[in-house]
Amino acid sequence: MSIQALIFDFDGTLAELNIDFALMARRVQELARDMGFRGPWPAGYTLEQMQAAAAVLGPDFQRRAQEIIESMELEAAGRGRLFGFTRPLLVRAGERGLGLAVISRNCGAAIRQLLPEVDRLCQAFLPREAVSRPKPHPGHVLAACRALVVAPASAAMIGDHPTDVQAARAAGCLAVGVASGRVDAAGLREAGAQVVLPDAGEVLGFLEGAVDFRRL
Image 1 (cartoon, helix red, strand yellow):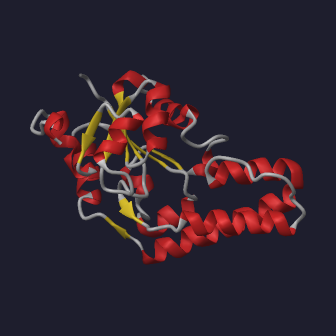
Image 2 (cartoon, rainbow, N blue to C red):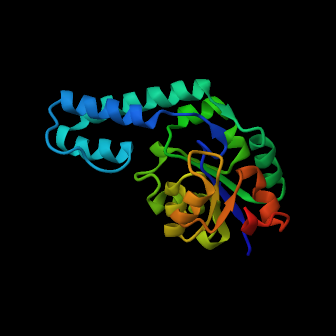
Image 3 (cartoon, one colour):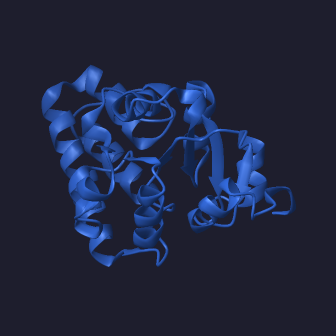
């Protein structure tokens, strides 16, 4: 295995934000209903639900829904924390010549609130507003690979959620699941993770062969 770049998710992977996604989805749906949306509510995650409803209700709904989502992300960032291993991990990985990227379905402002030096520590930073379709669409991961100038097969995508695993597999990257978020190791394996680690702090040890991921 020759991994030249690490692409990290943020929430649940490098930081603990504790966003109430159920409340977020409920608030977006309530706004849509108040603005006249009728019929069954679209399936999927909140961002995809918002986009589907916006196709019916128009740009004013999309703007107001985005404001709801971003305000909740920023509020969660204010209560959140970086994991203790995050900054040392990014520094060590950079010193070892690995390309580094952070990609997220969160807005950039919330991430910068917790990691203001993200642009200095990483060669690529792609929050949701930086791409047309965020993960689980593989384009999010492929955009990071292009920014890092690496082939997808030479990159590892590290994340705590099935959307990270799905995006990695679809893009052709090594899918590394970390059980530091809301999904346990079994759930990550079921989603298709090729490697499962307790947290992202173990990534360099795995790459150096010091961590036997098969026992995790």
